[in-house]
Length: 404
Image 1 (cartoon, rainbow, N blue to C red):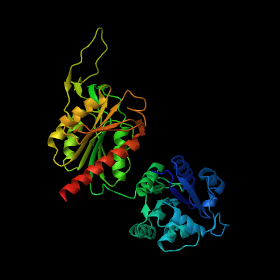
Image 2 (image 1 turned 30 degrees about the vertical axis):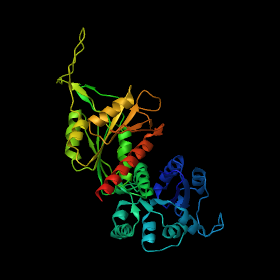
Image 3 (image 1 turned 90 degrees about the horizontal axis):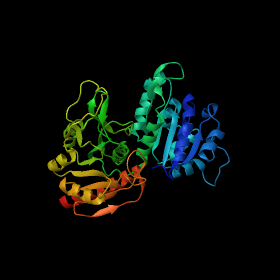
Image 4 (image 1 turned 90 degrees about the vertical axis):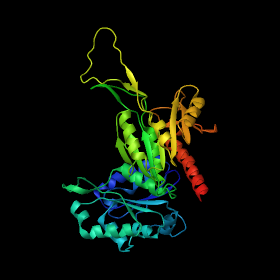
């Protein structure tokens, strides 16, 4: 999302200014072209040399420095920017932009740009709660400016409360959201499942599988970026959902079955990326099973087939499944797509290098009930998610055209 995007980072006078360093470094690693603008007060906390080294671009510190190229520099940067992030945003910068005061490079460039402007405030809690600051923030939001944070926590002034700079992943998530111009899923509600299930044997043991949840979380993230209202039903995983995605945590297949049926009825799209256990222990021991001589037998019983049940209940929804296979991948996937009434199924051979569980890439094929197959090479799971939604959006448009 950030690759080759020109992002301006505006830094103002706040002790939280040092956190902009990590933001700049992260954006550069993601392929962004980062340009830094510092207010005079910001230079009391950070040196331009630090930001120049990280951004690999000249750092602008004053309105009247010799320009690096022949143009009116604040206008040139304002026109070129894909996104402006002011982090940390002081009460001073918020107030000046709100009231049209352009007395330095940052305020002038901010008011000259047509790119989205994202403020990440950081200040003393009483300053943040001051009605003047709150009115300024409300007024800027009404005029189309964006805000993220602040959050509650310990502040540099020794007090505790709202005013702490929001965590970096939240700033990055909002930045990604603002960089996606088109929102083809606006007004759509989608349901995504992700992760494994845990099927308890006793209080300390359970049956599970190798799913990390990464693919499903990537699908949910891309849906949100494309404008959808997203409900993510997730088995146990350490991954944090993308900010803005509603996440419901479950453990067992039965819990996922109940949650999916409860949430899925009013969704226009359902994508089942979870690796749900087919079987569970027939009985759960209330106490830990003690080690003993000889073998023990564990009787298993079938879990409900969530995807098949959704296929039976499907009306005008788009229903997409996943098939992780180790043999006869496309044949098995085609049978599932037809049998379970799916619009298509995303199949992959988990034995292939670069595909499968607990890694950041996947190698998939889209298999359709009519036998059509679209195969793709190795891609990041984020990119796989984008292609999945591209196919879903195409089908949504086809259905809209048929109705029209």
